[in-house]
Image 1 (tube, rainbow, N blue to C red):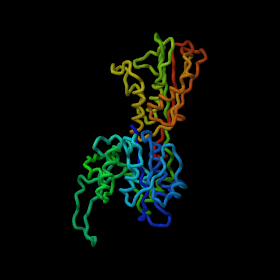
Image 2 (spheres, rainbow, N blue to C red; image 1 turned 90 degrees about the vertical axis):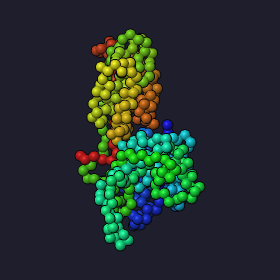
Image 3 (tube, helix red, strand yellow; image 1 turned 90 degrees about the horizontal axis):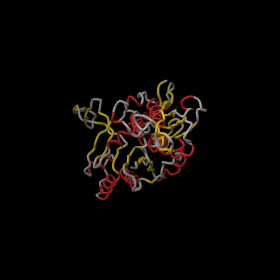
Image 4 (cartoon, rainbow, N blue to C red; image 1 turned 120 degrees about the horizontal axis):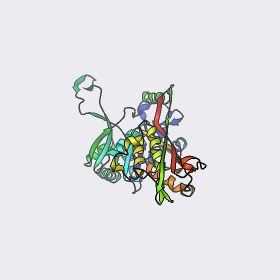
Length: 395
């Protein structure tokens, strides 16, 4: 499965006023709004490619304000309407893409949780739409601004982006709308509704606001530069050990290595993946591997440990975290880990959805013939995980 994000940045943003140019290129901290928005998606482990749609007049602005990233495709030129620009972005994606999330460039605070919610909500003939229930009282007024009635807010929601679709379905819907000359849709979910898709609401986030006015921009700048805030980066550690017994090989970090013995345990006794699982759970205070997969439960007898690590990854992602680094050290006298290091790193990266292999480290050391490890009675592993959460956190 390949997931793409289309970021629509072709608008003029005239309501923001001032002489700073289009709002997506106004600065928040030391980067423009668009760059912050792009970062939300390139940092997400389940997003494979980010496609930005820009105005024909903004080629130089884009080139000077946006940094290169391996996930970032070259920009495409939008059309005269938002709908036409969305179609241009969708059309630019390759056929190998299954899911697409379409997002406003002027929403730079979309969280990993919202992205997860949208990805999880996409299904055949179903659009996933992040939204929040309306909390304020709603009034309907006439042209003279005199209130005509109070409107019930029951069952009313404020729509946000990103809005998620199967690429084949939203692509066909946009093509059909263009052929029918229907161009008055205000968002992609409306195009989907028109084409017969069901629209499923998923939980949005009030921080995922759209910068429209100068006041919005100032609020965004204040949010970015809070005086008593720190980057929300967390580190967890893990340790595991298993005895060696009869067998023909050991499983370490998901790779079976031939050996004169095997690790003994309720599951496959992969100390590397067990230590990494505990390290990840530790970044969000979610207990340890035993509390999620009790050894007393027969269903885990002989289980492959990749499912334990995958569960920890999903738990962290649902909490809004992005894994930025994993480091595991194997402690044993034998077998030699060095020849298998790269396959082990690749397997960990695959389980965790990490594209950049430099963010996964596997090391090995002996115990200098000391203790039970030195006597080759067992193998241990130590692990550290670093996880970043979007935005900042109170000191």
